[in-house]
Length: 216
Image (cartoon, rainbow, N blue to C red; front, side):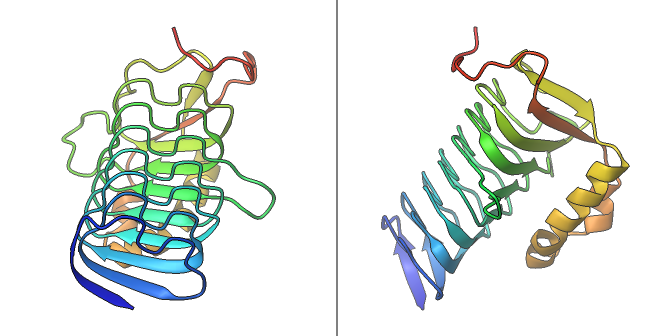
């Protein structure tokens, strides 16, 4: 299925199973919501809530996304060539073989991974000239999953309940596998990306806070 001259229409690809959808233009809110195995490719940008509650499948954005990307996604993958807005990956969760993956090529806005309960978020920080590739309050309320940030400077306003460390050899091997398809889709040099420094963000088991949902 190919849709051309798309100008913000909402709910495209909702609940799509076992089919491929190609969009030329700007997809509106809730692109691929409840996606259940389909593949959506956008040659352009997407607005808010891309992949809302998606269960399986793949969304490929040859551009940027708005706020709430991957909201409550519980499986599948979202690959964004450029940037994403506020609250990307909010309420992501995982269970057994359902391990959602969100990869953002340039920058993510504030509250990345808010309340994250599972899955993996990678922000590659391309074209950021050494700046942190995320906004304020990254990982607020995070109690599961992993965030990888390709940068040399820690983001500001990290909550104390999130543990940060430098990526080690095992982490880099994991990243290599996760980035394989992404780099192939966008013709990026995976070796060059992996030659950079990454931070790993995970919940701090020393200060559990399953009942705490704000950061003061």
